[in-house]
Length: 216
Image 1 (cartoon, one colour):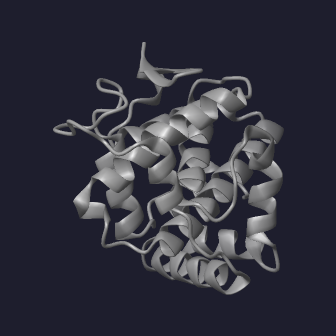
Image 2 (tube, one colour):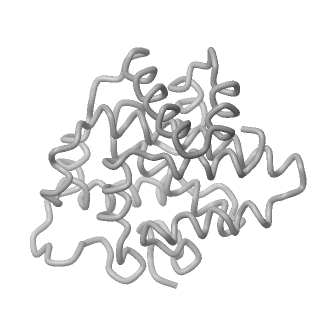
């Protein structure tokens, strides 16, 4: 991505489904982990993760990208045009896999793609080093349980969610690398922190530990 404005403009164009997942799973996360409000006996993490698998193909990713760009063009044409140019002809799933595989995350799973996006946001906002694979997988367990335990999220297509989170991850990662090259990391990090704050998670109020996110 050319700069943070592009990444921010694209984030503002996330689908209603993606926005719901962010708000439902991240709301209050800095105060109560791993269970969400009212969840007395949440499903186990392995079962939750297994339920969030989906079939990913070039067609599903292209559909996610086309929908994402269409939404962005209605509210931020400049960001949509910049993102469209940067991603034209790119194998987004391959880029995603190349970045996240060393952290133990996989393709074709909503929990893995969602975790990649949220942990990347935390790393940027806190100017952190790369997290350990154990910490990343612990966050995945936390978020997967929240997704499948919330009936309000059951109506959404796993494929649509997973592909959009992969796309959001790649866009945010590209903006981060651009900010590094251009010497704009501090404002970029502040912007990412504000972006997640609006979704219910204060990235600077939690630590990333081998047990996952914990309040500072």
